[in-house]
Length: 457
Image (cartoon, rainbow, N blue to C red; front, side, top):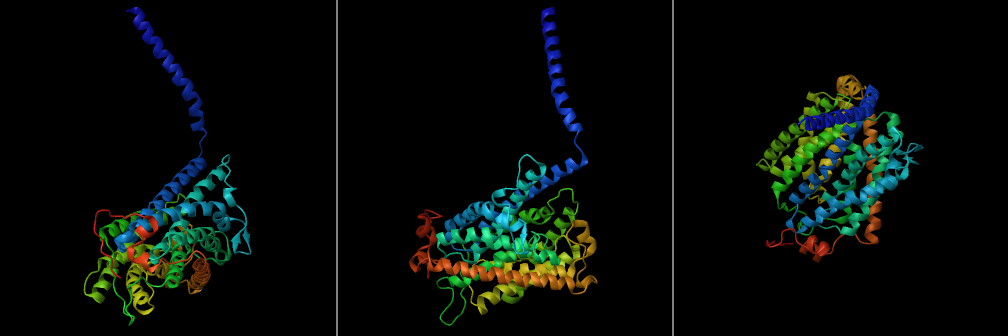
């Protein structure tokens, strides 16, 4: 009995000695932690969590695009959303990140930092570069995937892979450098906090160029030029995609502080949410007025329009201003979709040009109208007042300069890129492939095997 008690006490003593030894090595390390090191840790974790939220927007875009298009192209769309992130990640690692954030050449593009060469894992700043790269690649992939929607159902898969590479390697990073990387628009004082122009208008204007180069889907317009509706096959999937995007957008906008210690992330979350809600309501009522019914797809695009529009001013405006911005975007997206389809005769199956290009431009301009110095100073976006708060036209002109210059660069570069693709590997699928569906012709499979899918011209 005594032997058993002694053995138990010995084990307890050894355990306590071991615990003391372990904690003796650990506790001093905790004791050495400072407010500064804790802040770095919080900011790094916040930035990565936000990056993961934005990454989750990829399936959101995929579901929206799949739902708004026909069943015979669903696998093709899913493959495009998978591959634009995959090839885009490699392209952005190779050159895109350096062009965007490297040392500036004439304020136009970066010249170093390729292959993540500045990310030294043995230093705190180097480790931060890894986190920052992760946050930036999900933005680059968003710009690339926007293009997919406007070119859906008739684009060759190889062509999509090629232009995804160039958007992530060159077209998007150049704009990013101008505005976020210390380039010429940044020096003028442009404010595009989370990328209404840098991300969304880049995707939207490239989408416009692509849709023009491709031409409309078969059967979209009559010989008289009258637009015919080609309904999407799965509105519930589109709804899921919209809610995923709304969720991920909190990472998109609030995460752009890249600082969890910046408490304005709360304000940004509020402005983001209110703008989306107001846009959904106004898009619904606008469609209701124009078409006689509260159109579901227009309401969904209204949500996205509000989110895109508030992305630039989210850290610079009040909640009331966010509601106004969202409401205007909700009306604007409905009118824009109609104009692009029925007047310009540009076939955009998901409304990507209107949502991302038009509303991205509006959101960027809205900074020059609604910005309030108190909000911008707290968030770090810039302590400026817009026209409606006594700031005059100065900031609005700066914002307008950015919108116009980015349109010229992106639209022009995308036209050249798509033109080169068209005369080399080819841009558009054949008539037979389009009628059969790109799932079978490009990937040799059906998305809904066992279901009869009717194909009409």
